[in-house]
Figure 1 (cartoon, rainbow, N blue to C red):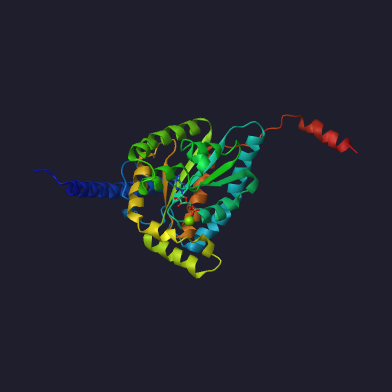
Figure 2: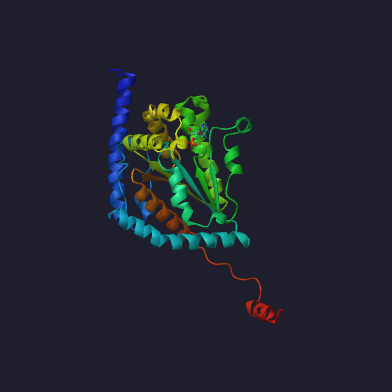
Length: 312
Ligand code: AMP
Ligand code: MG
């Protein structure tokens, strides 16, 4: 019997749903053997149905909000120390950097992450870039052109509030380019990120996963509070109407660009305190894996001390 297109799609959706559940259960089991938040949040390989991922979850953490806030405050000093080591390395000839890529629906907390997580570091060592619809000039170039120009210099922590992933998500949802164009971009992104990692940039990709309900609450809060109203655009409601299309586009983008060198992390983002706790941990863990040391002086410290003491 010939399956109808709709029946075939429904069957595929059911298979993806089953695979997603199995993989998330497997991830939880593996993560429980590890104390690393990186492992608890790592997106499993293969197709994923984001609709089945709990946005209120707190993988890797079983305390309450005040515990998470305390832990994060305790970790802030360590984060700042590691970032300064990277900065110092960059000032003394090192070529490494770190890039945090933040993606997620409107209100998912990309800006809040910059404020509360990146805000724990020295602003001198951070380069924050946000990406909106491309300008006329940017549109004349390949989609990665503006991204490459925004990469962090050696020693810096770069943060992308939206990124090249918009070119396979919003572009697909809104048909801003033909499928033949955006479907080639997954491979281009994987190649680009692999070169980036090869040249010394640690890439930390986080998808801030918010539920539809909490997103609505946050949009309402933006309307209710005059100090938040500037963040609201009437078009945000039209984007909400395409939620399922966005989840499908994100599901593919995440699964197809989930490489070992630049893996995706799925960060439940309905609870802001968990999101902040989780991304702080992710950054500390990735920094620690970089084995950052303080640069050794390239001068004779004792001789210099004598010179300083002898100086007028
Ligand atoms: P916001 O982050 O709220 O300032 O919104 C930025 C807007 O720019 C979002 O609606 C993004 O989807 C949109 N945007 C970012 N990058 C692209 C892109 N490459 N093509 C089209 N729209 C984009
Ligand atoms: Mg917005």
